[in-house]
Image 1 (cartoon, rainbow, N blue to C red):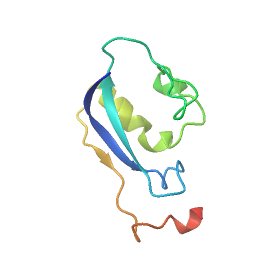
Image 2 (cartoon, helix red, strand yellow; image 1 turned 180 degrees about the vertical axis):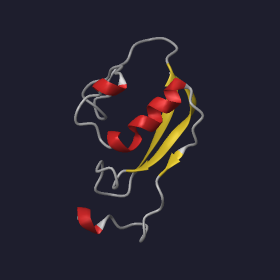
Image 3 (cartoon, rainbow, N blue to C red; image 1 turned 90 degrees about the vertical axis):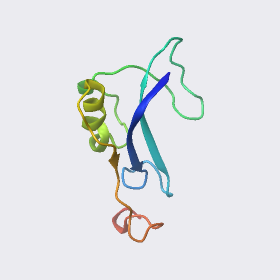
Length: 96
């Protein structure tokens, strides 16, 4: 894979992906050869999916999905950043 650009910086607590402060960096990449392989500690499977047929459940897809597919279509987009939580290192009181 070849990295094309940064698409998003997402707060794992906000998208329900983590119970600790953990940010996900989402990159647009271009395949340049080889085959997709799932990393045994990161995921159980990998694949190419159209927007209307994403696997379920998929952490935070409702938050980043449209933005990612806009980037893949070549639409001019800014990097999607989650705003800083207040207080910074505490989770959402509704999620504890």
